[in-house]
Image (cartoon, rainbow, N blue to C red; front, side, top):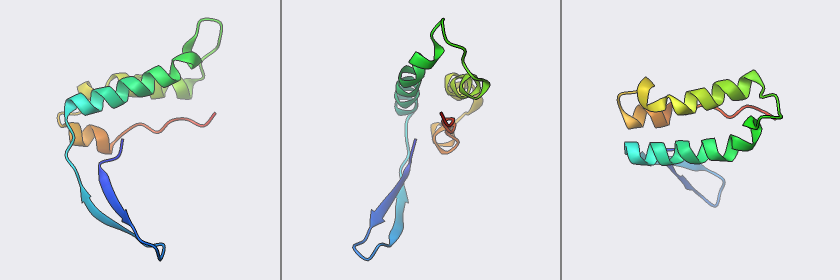
Amino acid sequence: MHRVITEHFADGRDDLVHSRDVTWLEVRAHRDAALAASDWRAVKDRVLPNAWKEFRDLLRTLPQRFDDPNDAADNWPVMPDE
């Protein structure tokens, strides 16, 4: 989840414009979408690699691990490689 707004220039430069605050509603919606997008990896007839188990667990526990939605967004779990 990205909070940083970047301005892209024609000469190839990217400059940080600002970071925006997010709400728990946005964090949970983004989290739920990420879980739904990876649900197919967790079907019964497929072995789920540990990296994916950890990723999905980190997504599920975001609200419990952070007091502030901005901290949760800034520490978003990295999706494992295939």
